[in-house]
Image (cartoon, rainbow, N blue to C red):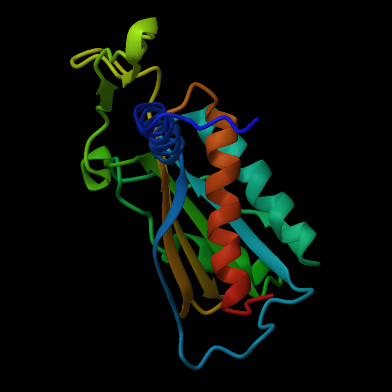
Length: 211
């Protein structure tokens, strides 16, 4: 016996799948932009000592970021050297390379990697509200009814912030080798957000053949 799914059921199922995919996309992490020096020699930082720094006004975010940044450097055969604390001028404003140059030379580091952690601009992602639905429907004399709906209440506060990382990789003399920016949607797990952001940035660095 062959069971034929009524068209209305198939349409409802398709919308349900689309809704779930949309919601999954809202929680994604992405590499927004990146740039690498066209004259960058492949493997410039392979096996090298690298000065690492995270810039944030939040001490917890700064330490989590630094741990993850260091782990990614180690995973690529490098030796991370924590940079001295540097005062950040203001939210979203990077300190630049100048405060790290002396420390990099003293540590005999071949490069400097800095991650500036900021709150992501959700407007660039097209907003945060989601509302998808199908009204009730009926089939034949059995009066089968159902619906599909997904919604995010308008005006409700998000569970937490979405974050962004602006990454800068320079040589010990301060010449910019690679830069990238990654962002993610709001989530209650800040550690997971920073881990995904760091992996996204290093994924771009791997394609640029920094290590």
